[in-house]
Length: 337
Image 1: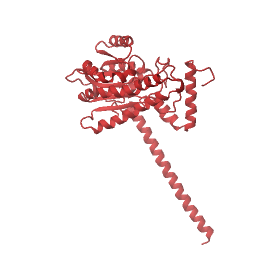
Image 2: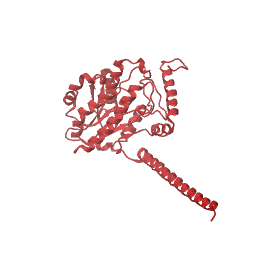
Image 3: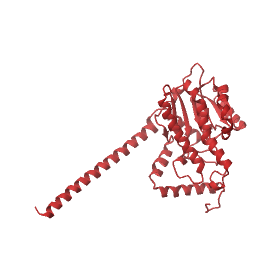
Image 4: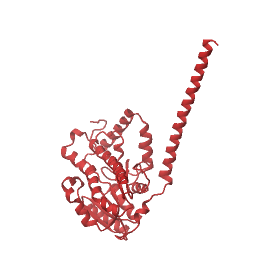
């Protein structure tokens, strides 16, 4: 056999092996993508919510849910949807007048429900943390509390601005209200939820924790904290004996039609606050720790944007931020500072 013939045979063998390896890798990749697609379809369109398990009355009476930041937007959407689902609700916020308006609206639409109000500025939790648990126990300790929705977040105006223009007070208040307060009220209410399990804690996160978020530096960091806090608490409760009936779920959010900080109209990619809340409640009992509850957001952020190279994604986000800043009158047209 000549050297040329031997070399050809070796090359042919290597080529065949290489093709088999590439085919194997391709098959594994395709199988994984198919698994992801099947899982996506199941979780968003087929799987049934376990919310009904939280609605069972006990010796303390009918089920209750506490929603933080409930005077407007997503929090108000949760209050509406939960009343529709048969829960009595506790509305938390810092503005008594706004909360009373929401309470009156709910009672007019759902006269068979009960609605309580809990007034506390989330950004002041550092100075009120000592009596938070006592307040909650005194006012709501006798209720059949089954659900906590940590929706509140503290933002500064304008929403999009360079860190150098923020004051230390703004940064502190933003972190206190967005990260510290949800952790504190969760700690305070865990004994109640444990007593009435099955129960659930829904922590509202944000897509800005998953993307480059220029001009939202400490807000996006606080939202990332919420996601990690939620996942770790879920693992902790699963490890603790007797706590398996308390579910903890982080819910990631894209744009939602609210009037804060600016008015947004509902669209395919921008659901109404109530529609978004309904999607979130549909994931109760899903067995996951972090989810995109609104499927177009999952496609937009987890799929399309997730496939972009980092530099391209950052440029795309900067373009979106420039448009939002221009709408708010923060920058001159065509200029990003």
